[in-house]
Image (cartoon, rainbow, N blue to C red):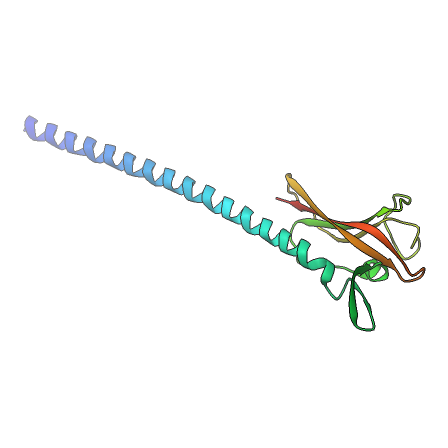
Length: 157
């Protein structure tokens, strides 16, 4: 009787150890998959930001056209009314960098005596951010002038 009890206890101990090893292996596999998924998500969001940075200056809602011909410039009057939606946790700002003007966010009341156009703003509660920017040309229809600007996307992740 004692020998069979010892064998049962040993069997239970072996099963317990194997169960613990399998549980640890599953936990490590889960953590590895979770880290890989987060990395893939971050790469996907970064590709979205690069795509937005490349396509936004040519979008019909923002670009300046003369007789239906695109002029590779952003129309500042269109920027006053531009409101993008569903872009994730980003802040999209277009700034006039040359010639320098007062550092004021543009609205209908202070146009054209301003230099920043906020066309999307959703920071969320994310802590990390990355700023990507490209130079753009700004067209001012009231004065018929072209000025230098910077399209800046601040991406929160």
